[in-house]
Image (cartoon, rainbow, N blue to C red; front, top):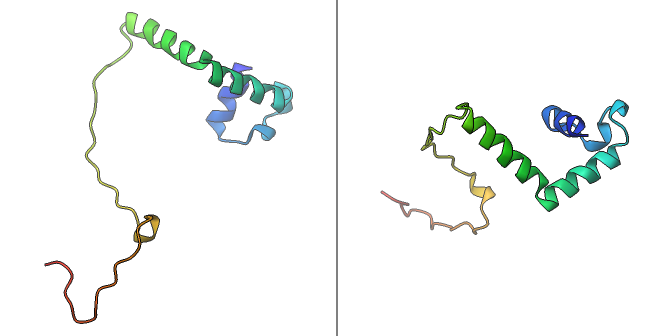
Length: 91
């Protein structure tokens, strides 16, 4: 079951496109949904990180990226401000 979930996320396929060798996709989806809701995945992640950290396999160096991404003007929810003809904008 876990292998099927990992396969699905690794390949990016839809749940219904999981190979039949994993079993019914609905069963796998339901288990993933339950694990996500009840915090099972969070517990597994915390345990794996703790074990890796104890073994010295985790590098806690943080990298901060100051890249700026600008959204297209139509991607915002604000209305467009019309500037009268002949008037400068900014400067």
